[in-house]
Length: 427
Image (cartoon, rainbow, N blue to C red; front, top):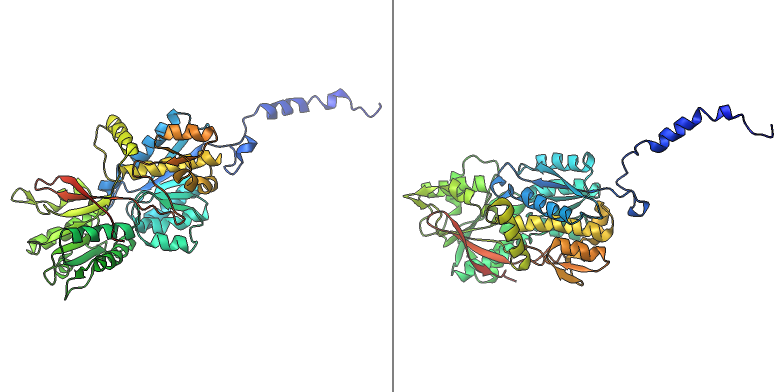
């Protein structure tokens, strides 16, 4: 039969072939290249504190990330696909942070993560991110430990932050102490990467400008899990200092200050505080006496933000939430925007793609642009950009660090917070 098989042998196969051709395709592998046409939507995770010692500051951070994502999705998304977010609560706890990051990496398969906030949580979680090639951008982990580890090559480029390291903020707090004429300062810090790193950098910077740690005293470190801090408060005020550099978190920090006040230690001593307690909730937890805030007159530093990017975000935030913009909202917005811009620039919704382009979109050369939709459009047209963030210019160095500027804030008698000045770090 000239090698031709009877037609009946083909008939049973045709329905199968048609079924296979028309069947829905299996989900694309997230590692498929954009050129293959199998690009997947960009998945971003957040690892931020909705509960725990930093919850009063952290609760607005996922909202800022979602606002950034909604803004970009409204103008076409990233690589012409929607961006989706998966939120995880770090609980301000390293163990919870590891579990949450593992889920984001191994179950949700995210390409980038905004987080963590607490340095101790980022320290615990970053190894999981690096191992799974996930770009991690923290809006608030400021420990100098990350600079050191980046220099040692531990992060392989999968780490950056939109808040400057404490080597800068410690220098800013030292400069503030000098500007206010304080000669003798004691320190008390939470005993973790954040607190200890800040303490060491502050002492070094304060001594550079002629200050001294009060004779007869020594740096005091307190347990993050401590229920009472009476003995630590007494030790922190030894030697009659002019001021106390107190590197605290909200819940445990309020316990320390109440204890010091109740022991009669705080009279004529100024608290020098940081971003970790830049929160109305902290002042509320500390409490009042005679209708006046216990820490009225306290001074602090917080990474500053200025420029067109901040003005635009402030308007958008007010419109969408009805609230004034709070601490670390600009840094969280910028972290999310940078992840999305880097993915667009790389033409790849993957952690590796984001890592390869994040410094390119953050730094010169390129068109300076603060609006994320305008930035996306420029990238689609093949142009270079230099993103100008809501928290500053967000130029990222080879260690994932930015320098930043610092606002000076104070606690008023009624317990409200007010930004009153700016300060440049001691160099």
